[in-house]
Image (cartoon, rainbow, N blue to C red):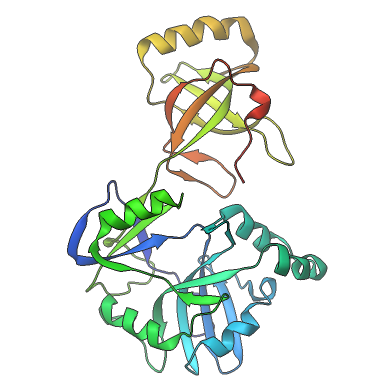
Length: 302
């Protein structure tokens, strides 16, 4: 298991925060899942898909001394903290760059931290120990620093932690059964993520009426404008659909299969739960048209 790719345990999606004395609750950090393998003075970082990315994070040399055991496999979230919260795009940037000069510059502009939330191995394997015991081991194994630290968690009070995460504009929380084993590559309801809905103002780039009504939404990014980021099919009232179609007919440009593209002059607010690495917004819901919004102002919020 040491220094070989491992498929981490998968978190399933939940709906609402809850209280339960059989669970612990952690903040959901917004970064990349990273498994750290350490033996002696050697440390390696693996992504959830098994790629070795150690060379991208010179900070890991500092982390070695903070792991107080000769051998360890730690399940972590790699993050970049900005203004008190983790920023997904900052960490993705660190994962994209390979040039040594850019990496050295990013040590200052995009410093990385590894938030450890589980231990799979130290002097022996811990996969079949209850989570609560693994949490206790984790606290003993790591001396917290800016580079690596155990995640905070509370017992029973998931609703309180959810409210705390919303106040800080964080991604959400994760609920985990205290007695759960670590099941490699498995997805079970022992680990549940409850994400905070986010809203964003988008440009309407097109629409379709078959197989059901939906609008194509887009955003501006630093390197590209009017990038499609999803299709929204829920949240519309019939009157809103009719009003939109009446206006959209005057803005038609080209038709491609089921999509009618329009001039990018209309904006709307949507709510979403997740986004992919390529900024496609998932579980998106229409919240309202923005008649006075300038499409030039609809940028991805980095």
